[in-house]
Image (cartoon, rainbow, N blue to C red; front, side, top):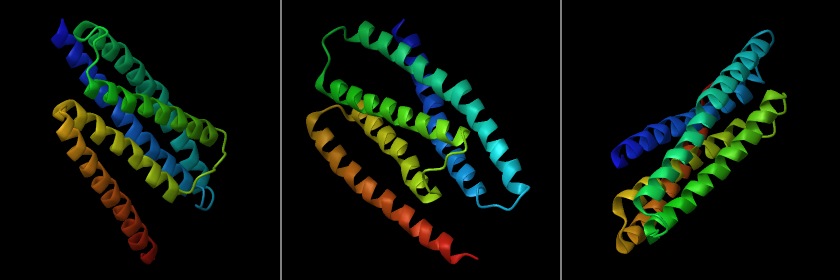
Length: 178
C-alpha cells in the first residue's frame, strides 16, 4: 500500500508542478500579447485565456488536490503523528507552495477578466518561485540530515542568486534585440 501511495503522490506532484510552471508562462505570453496590434492581440488573448483555463482548472488544481490527498494519506500511513524535523520543514515549504498557487489563482482570475497588474518581467521572476520551492522540497526529502539541510540552504541561497542574475541577464539580452 505504501508504494502505491508514494507512486500516486509523486505522479500528482509532477503534474502539479508542470501546471504551476506552465501557467505563469501563459500569463507572460498573455501580458505580452496585450502590446500586439489588432486583430493579433484579440486572437492571442482569447487563446491564452482558453489555454490558461484548461490548464488551471483541468490539470493544475486537480493535481494539487490529489497531491494533498495522497501526500496526506502517505503522511498518516508512514508517520502518524510522529513527524521528523525534515518532514515538518518540507510541509512548511509545501504550505508555501499552496500559497503560491493561490496567488497564481488571483493572477489567473485577473487576466481572465482582462485586468493586467504585472509586467512580463515581474511574471518571469514570479515563475521562478515554483522552481525555488521544487529545489527546496526535493533536497529536503533526499538529504534529510541537519548538516545536509544547512548546506542545502546555502546552496539554495546561491541558486536563488544565480537564478535572479540569469533573469536580469535575459532581460538585458532581450531588450537589445530589435
